[in-house]
Image 1 (cartoon, rainbow, N blue to C red):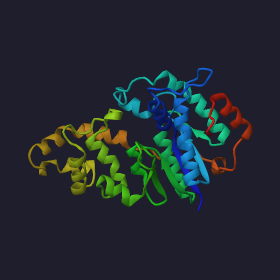
Image 2: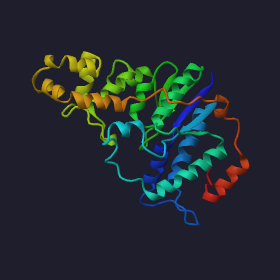
Image 3: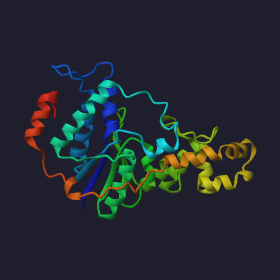
Image 4: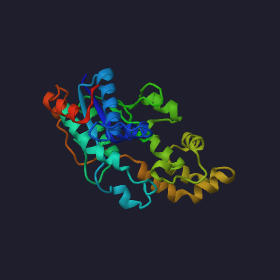
Length: 282
């Protein structure tokens, strides 16, 4: 079966930037390539160990998305992207072009939404689909034909999550409950509020009992003690949080799968990229 890897590009760039924060990797011409090295390392690992037949990189748009427009505080707490990291993004596009791996970005939608749409379409087209991202919210997309590939981190090996492993790891009944799980517990990294006072353990238990955010809100009067009050007071936050945590699978794009086929590299371009950024290992 053809094997499609949909790779979330920015986490690999961020990882490289922060791994080398104290000792940035500079070329002899003064270019900081720390973030680019993070992407190179991630791509090498995937291409060599997993041997996909097809690959594509998903990327955030340059401007706001529908989530920012619906909820102003969304990701508002995040610091501005470091200049050296931002400067590496065009370098990453050069590398991707040399490796002949397309980069897909769609105005108004995040990389997660691009990944979700491509994953669903890829599974429907008969691919064995892997979403390469460290972000747990992508677990909601795991289904027959679609797995979550969480890259190696802090010395731990990369992990592949199928439906059973997602449910076991986060104590869910089915992967799509990750939407409700995050809507209840919140996600500080994205400034998603959740219900104040409800943590991950409580969220998992509530979902086991009532199935969804809507089911929990409808039955909040049955909850004992302060928990019922917390749910009643936080139902609006939970509702907007569910909207924010739901990854779209209807982004307006029509992939040409032949464009994603890994059928060799552009050797001249890759040689030029390696020389320009002194990527000796690559």
